[in-house]
Image (cartoon, rainbow, N blue to C red; front, top):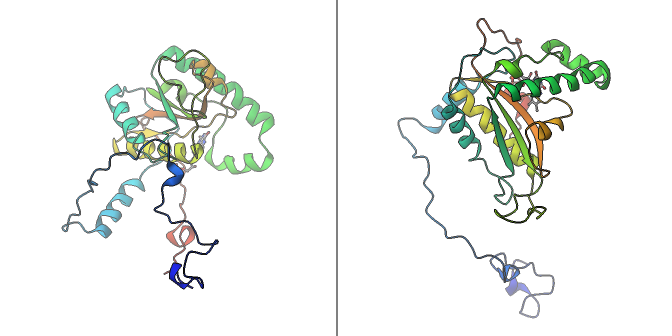
Length: 257
Ligand SMILES: Cc1cc2nc3c(=O)[nH]c(=O)nc-3n(C[C@H](O)[C@H](O)[C@H](O)COP(=O)(O)O)c2cc1C
């Protein structure tokens, strides 16, 4: 049996799968968007994909999480370009369920540090399991988070559990659905970190636990949930990082050719 014509009575059988081109399920729903030709990255025969991919690995392999920052300023424009890059991420049903709250205001940074350190003291003294502390010990992290004040920018990433209600709608109007928001925001954060690194800056992926205080401190609405705090800036003079080893290709990839 390989299709309609193999049916013993000549027509489609009741178990025939629906025609994937049949859009009748979309009747009455928003129309298909206009489609435009893809503008691909031009393949450059002088730099074949192997060489391009290898060169990009060379750049990204030098990204490191930094925990001691310089207070040297970073322009708002730089942060804006990095956030625009994050905003190019794919997302479930193109809902773009992210908000990047970019903080350079010293008073706000001080508030964030105070609240984060209070949570982190609880975490290190009580909430963290022995196993978790064992895994953190080699990295040398502790409840003190001076980088939250020293780094010129904190990008606080929120995931949106609903889309924004339409502009001008009355207070309390619910937003729309979002899909795969954790996956979508995670991908966007990865792209943000790549953009920061590409700009010659450093970042820390910081997850004070729990993060509920960030919505309050930053005055964000109910449908935004803090996801991660990313201090961004230049490294401190003589900055050191743990001498970590990354898994090899053989450990992270499986090929079935
Ligand atoms: C989701 C996530 C949460 C993290 N949370 C923290 C954190 O709260 N504090 C911290 O110092 N590092 C944090 N890190 C950084 C990791 O410790 C770091 O990425 C890891 O040790 C590997 O180092 P590298 O980024 O230099 O390769 C986090 C990283 C990720 C991806």
